[in-house]
Image (cartoon, rainbow, N blue to C red; front, top):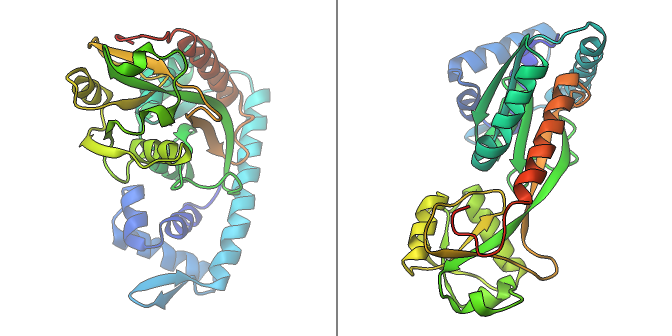
Length: 310
């Protein structure tokens, strides 16, 4: 319903360069440039202008983008309304999300959709939050579960509908016998002097831990770097440091203790459900969100203190 060339312009605006937009869309830079030239010729305006060693959007391009956002949202509302009155939904439907969501939340939702809508071809894709928004914008995904970070679009971004799904508390994982296991009330600040295991710089997990520690009033002493919970937990069990693990994440059977943190506010990651603007009322999206919410509540209710094998 929307000219694909307009989506290409949206991706260039989002990423700032033709090359980055092409990479996000799995296109070649020449293919992106060609579509932009075609769009400019059809509209009779210049869309890009040289800016230093790069490019900048022209005033005309920004006008086109503003109307594209409105048109895209209206098209999604039309699809949602049609799906609600034409009987059995059919066709492809893609769920995407970060690793924990892709492991524990999306598969049960996909199974529920498969049972409820047998004509819908459900697909699950694991992706970090920023690429999830690219997948939504390009039309390659219909619903994304993302963690809100400084790198993700703001809640006021008119291209997306982002709504809080749940706040996933961060638990402290320490070696068995650690001093904090004997304390009735543990805050994140109580662990300020410990050696820390965090994710690679720039990743979502690294941002999550650094932001939580900063809010608690300290900068963590980073002893080791690990993106996977299994790696981090193994290091904790052998006394190399401590980690923060989201409540929804499972960890292997190591000699560790998982401690729910207290304090105001207790550290947590905010998980959002994101769709393209106007798509949230689609019946398949609504059913997926219902299944995801139910699974999340069940998982959060089964994470006791002193959990080693989660």
